[in-house]
Length: 291
Length: 109
Image 1 (spheres, rainbow over the protein chains, first blue to last red):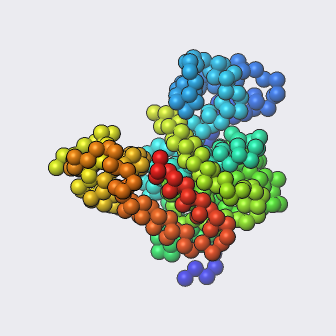
Image 2: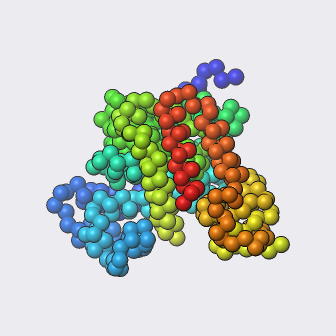
Image 3: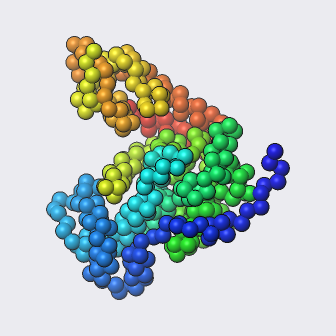
């Protein structure tokens, strides 16, 4: 039946999609501002405040039990001073991404709620693993984990027919969704689509690389360690049965990635415990952004 | 038979009607006795209410003996099933053992 995979120019397809979600202007502004090491909290706050909806979401989040601060934080400037630039940027980005994509799509054939549950889970697990490994890029790991499967949303919302075929193949062959995608998309997967999307958004090359390679991390990449974190986080969240990644399987963890993280097996049960708690906290965070 | 919302469920309650999720998957068979861990899990899974019979048992007796092995067995079974295609891989075996250990301890809290 499928002898030759169809020749597909994925980039052309993605480029031709009109109405692809863009990151809010404010995120691009903030990212640019933060490239200057001398930028002040007040400047960042001013940029964020230009988007009233986002600003009030951030304030709601920082005052919630997610952060657990004892006294009320009333201004964005104050929030930035307390949480730090990186944390606020990550909060703003997560809130924006989640809002852009969590809308109701009547034509959706995908379990969106399960998808977000899985993505939030991988974000939380990536954060815990990065912390444990004493990596600097804890917030980046969280964001990358959150975004790693965005390609699936693009497939669902903009490439309906191929996606429908993909889900059918998953059902009949009982395979990983990536395997089904390769058959229908000429060797490409949601990882490639997601990478193209965040590239269009002008995000750091780090995010592009992590999303592209999260199923098959490669030591040739500059971002091997953080990609391995998201790769392992993905396997853990699937194993813990959190959310719905589109299939019901647990993939084998890439041995190179596992060695790179060098986790002592004795500490694994405790790691699962921390992941479980972080996932609960993070879910609260997103319930607040949805409103 | 009395039905209560999940936030009013208490350890020791005897569940008389099987609890299903909205996909018809059995989350808890009829005849289970609730304990803290089960209530937490049902809440997490979005269960709104349970049909129960107050057995006159108090919270104390929902201890080790009446700890329902049934739900644990189902969770364990699903875990083993999902890991069976990859259990030959030493890394995945390690992950499996650790996850099992975590789930067993979580149950006891």
